Image 1 (cartoon, rainbow, N blue to C red):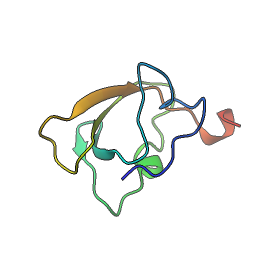
Image 2: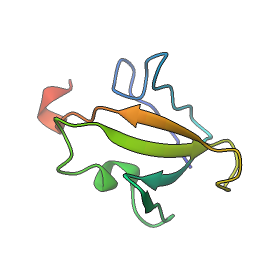
Image 3: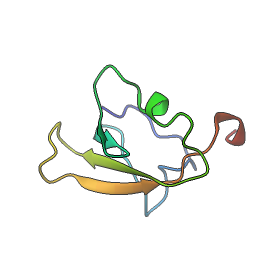
Image 4: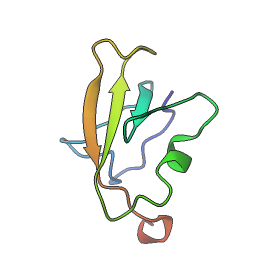
Length: 77
């Protein structure tokens, strides 16, 4: 479950809005697991676009795809 979204970060715009309380179901077509952190799953993907499947419940049914442009940690302050 998403616990925080960085203000003005890649997931905090009208087109890519991910909200605290939503569930990340898949990143780049790979199912997300509760033990794998969202940030970790984006490692090495900066500079491109990644499809992130999110939902308000822990189920893929009715989920939406958000296209994120991840940035390297040192690019965001």
